[in-house]
Amino acid sequence: MSLMKSISGIRGVVGESFTPDLITRVGMAFARHIGGGKVIVGRDSRITGHQISQCFQSVLSLCGCQVIDIGVVPTPTVQVMVEHTRAKAGVVISASHNPIQWNAFKLINKTGSFFGPEEMNAFLSLVDTIAPFGAMWNAIKPIMYNNSAADIHIEKVLAVVDVAAIKKKKFTVVLDSVNGAGSVITQQLLKKLGCRVIPIHCDMSTGTFPRGAEPVAKNLKKLSQAVKTHKADIGFAQDPDADRLAIVNEKGHPIGEELTVTLAALRCLAKKKGPVVVNMSTTKAIEDVASHFGVPVYRSKVGEIHVVEAMKKYRAVIGGEGNGGVISPEVHYGRDSLVGIGYCLELMAHRNEPLSRIVSSLPVYYMHKDTLHSDDGFDTVTIAQKIKEQYAGEVINTLDGIRIDFVNHAAFKGGWVHLRPSNTEPIFRIIAEGKSKAQCDAIVDNFKHMK
Image (cartoon, rainbow, N blue to C red; front, top):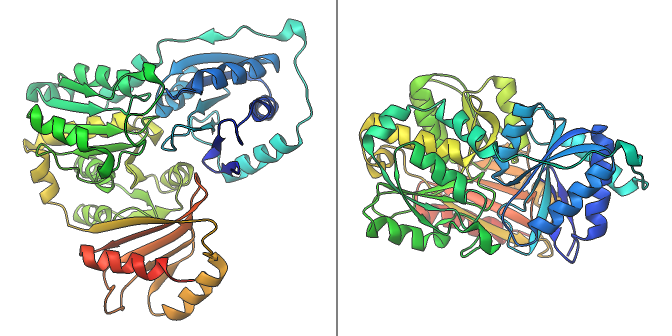
């Protein structure tokens, strides 16, 4: 299986494309790229993480870096710690939503954000060409350990939400962290917010995931049942590195990842009006919420760093991605499930309404996400030309793959479709949204069979 190198980092299957040789080359290249200095290293809980982290940290140290190991923590916690400690860079060893056999390097620069396209391209070139080197024996620094990262991250979240209002509600919350990096830190946050916490899938010691890694509806059956059994106010689900958040309402119904960032926008815009930035694949509901508050929405390419760069450009007050990724500038520029949880609970507390009622006030759209494998004969160049000819009367955007907003098409009017290659898997993504399930399914079926 080929190694995936993209704006989302370097990822592959351990023992196939993700090997000790790769770990060594990435470590040497990273040390050379940043020119030495302090590096924060964290990882998720998957079974290969400890060995890979130790190997990688040793390479960094032997190449002259001061390594600070913060252990098993969410990806956003590493980003927070890079900023907090004024480190030269950070690395997260996590394949995020990929299955258990995968692992990856996610690379963070001194701003606390992921590498941008130019920096990533330069780094990947260095990985391919790096010649072996190392620091002199008397310049090698011991690896340091820091156990305060979770507390620092939690305090940053508590500083931006109405803790008193949330505590007053005494919410009962079911948490499904897929035995991942969010398992402990998220329970700590919820308890500081005065919540009664019912944890499921929160054992980081197993090294494995008891459900599918992605927090999508089909993987949340146990969470939904637990919410109903415990008569909880809400259920939260994370992915293995806890940068994505999905939500189950008090009736045990998953509301869909797309509404995570929509609810965050609803909370933030009620406090402070300003632009919103989301990627090309995010629900139109975000535009309806922004329109209610009279603020613009800007769309970026898919990928956290693309959203972050656009947020900085337009000075957005909130942003994110429709896969459950909330990005809040008042905490840090990165997807963060802990921020999403704080915002959601504050929204419920301030409105004094159950989540189902808040969601029912939002516009209803239906989304269908599908994939094609790289060998399915889906030629993007040919397809792009066909689309431009066949859908000339529609709004076509080629910023990131191909997105079509249907404004004239009789059957598809009011819907949209986005077709693009994945940054994290060897697949092609087809995402469509419509005003009905039938319309949405028809859009996907139409483009899935276009060759």
